[in-house]
Image (cartoon, rainbow, N blue to C red; front, side, top):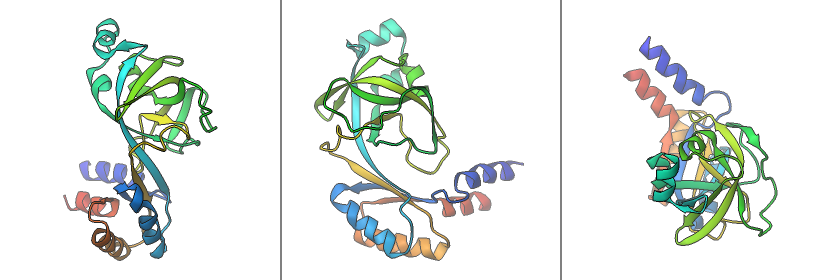
Length: 217
């Protein structure tokens, strides 16, 4: 029973045309080279996602300690490091549950409209229209919650608590996450071997290997 339950969950995450390999910690000056390498093995680039790290500086124009005392917000949600992204489209692993998705590039008017995952919104005790100020590696950016999303976290792909529109975070220091789908263990091994030789800082998650490991256990 345990075997079938575990394998069913992991197999579902990597079924059909979904990614079964994730590569992360790819630096900006390495992204094009990694993309060329993946495509040289005739593999698709399913996701190419920028990631920017930041922390909350204030919520509803209150410092974090004061806000937490008033609203009993979760400590982990207030003080964690957020790894966020920016894009104009909603992913197939997400569903809009409230508000409006921002498809356009940011026009420069503050506050910046963002999308928040529903669980972290509950933990922060915030909702549509509330204001969050992020410290983006020393630069404060004031945002307003334009939409709330539900996210299928079991998907083997980059998912995020916070999504910015294009036109805001591009100049910030960032790394990239790529996903692809291989057809055979040999194809996966060849790609991983070459990737590690050329870009030793890049980390790889191979779902095929995970499935085999779970099956062995």
